[in-house]
Length: 115
Image (cartoon, rainbow, N blue to C red; front, side):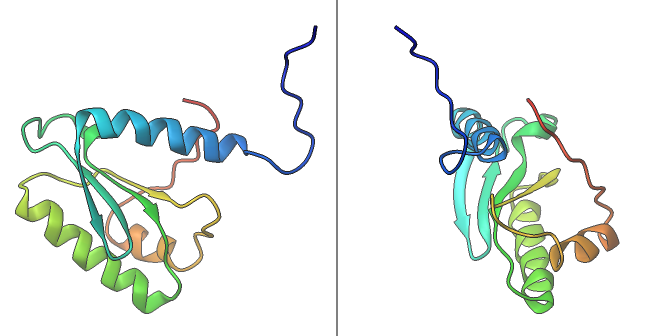
C-alpha cells in the first residue's frame, strides 16, 4: 500500500508549510500578540535569542500601511525592550509595499526554502 502524499496542484505549499512549522515553534518559546498588520512573537526573558523576536503573518495592502506597520511593530518591540529581528510575510503576501520600508529600516531580504 502506497501511503505517500503526491500533491500535484492545490493543497499546501512548501512555503506555507515552512511558515506554519516555524510559527508553531515560536508559539512554544515566545509570547504571541496580534497587532494590526500581523502577529508579534516576543521573548523578553531571552532578549539575546534573536530568532524568538519576530513579526509574522504580515499583511500589507498599501505603502501607507507599510509605514504604519513598521511604526506600530517597532513601538511594540521597544516596549518589550527587545529588537524585532525578522518580518515574515503571510503566505500570499507580495513584498512590493513592505520591502522598501523594511530596507530603509535596516532589514535585509533573506529567502529561505527550507528550515
